[in-house]
Image (cartoon, rainbow, N blue to C red; front, side, top):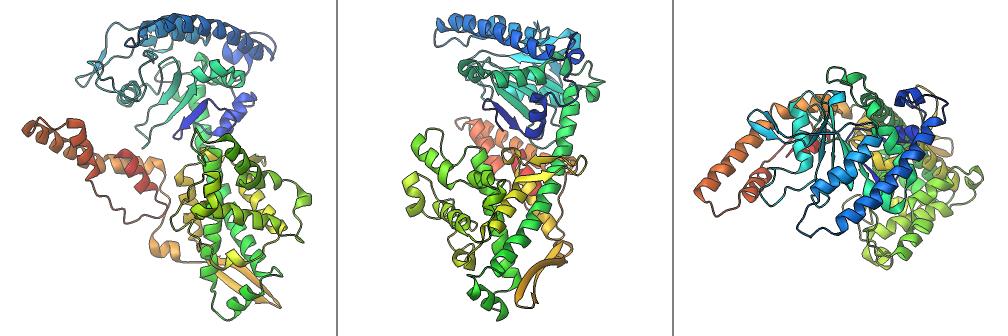
Length: 526
């Protein structure tokens, strides 16, 4: 995703939806949808005017908070000098709430609400208050984010905003989901670096006209429509990626089996020393290495944030899988006479296999079975032509929307582990075989029984959530109660540490674990 200040957590929105929003290619991006009148260009003009006003507000706000003492949170300044005026430019009417709302005996002090949108919740805290950490003084019993999330889960409100002036998050009710679901705009970064494109997207996504008019009609709001479109898009990506992996495995296998340099490999197959199943395992590891590296590259996780820029630049310019993805679109490079791209990819793999290769670039080995030096077996010594490799990289980089026929680039930064689990689950439908066709060997898939014999299935969120709620949540509560009782007997022990220890003592076994979806969500819940 090309928006540096935006972070997406959970299935609230996908990167491709944001791209369409930025281009104004989705529903709700015409002037009348923002309560504007006039030509289509007026939305852009309004965003430019808002950007100029916001920059003025930011400068005044920064001057105001620069004189605060270090022990001051700056709550009043953040609310009155910055966030309330900013939200007003987005059409909100934030009214301060003098009383907290009581729900099931608990207090929820949401700082502001918009009376024109059925008391839409907006929680604003000081710029020195972390959204994810509880204050150490006598403040609220939980972090601002947790407070708003729990409030959403207990009420009929579907969305809410929470901010400390530097980070602005749109949260969604997560009772029907297992993991948190929000989108975050780093407005401090937007303002300091002058990232107009990110502000424009913020305007198009968080303008008041996107939000529910009432709690009863929340499903008809534009933001919920975008959310549902994202869920459908995620399903299409899972389907498209699964087909791309299946196609690429067969292409890779046949490319290795029939390359002129690989006579030893062919002899091993003909003599039964290399079975179709073993070759298939090598292809799986090759594919999952590529998928893993594409994810960590797009999420900027290859290097730590403070890494040496020169080394980072060398990696991305000469070694990265992203480089190969960029070249895959150039047809003249897909030449079966050469094999230099496979040699380059093997060099990239070695960086993550052992310290002696990755050390000069400060890249640490990823270890594990997937990145062990012998994970690819005989493929480490085999040749593969550029045509096959470039074709497979193209398969894994772009897929065609089955509904519209539109070609879409896979945004690996937005994919979750579940997507990769569902890919593997789909492959269990097949069994690999190698057949001889004259002098050539041919790898293909036939209908298999492994999925039926293992009982492996991808379980969607709407089924996982009630399963966890009606089983695991009772165990969690029991463990927390035990921690509280232990604290009463030994007050010198810190209750948070006792609770953490109690939760970590829970042992979970998912006997039907295939894609790992249930197990992953259980871990998130704990």
